Image (tube, rainbow, N blue to C red):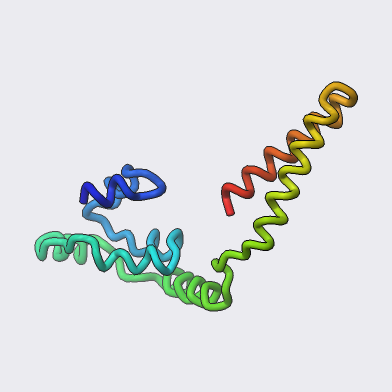
Length: 129
């Protein structure tokens, strides 16, 4: 468990939070196909823990089932495949906005401020995507 905690990109606290809990929905919703396949390497729950969880966790709802189906369809359609050309264009836009903000900082501060705000917004979306 310690290796998984240290290696988890979003932080060890998520591994701790779901220790002993059903994390199926989180795995399906927030992880790539590769990451979702890694669960097979995780340590298995004890039979006692499985019994307790099976009594405490409700059956999958129709919404959960429909969400899994939608995610599988989107993944099959390529929604999570990287497009390096598109990413390069977005980085180019971000660089242009940042350079524009620097270039206009002394001559047109209001324009520089807007360009900087757009650059930071763009940077946030780049990090998100």
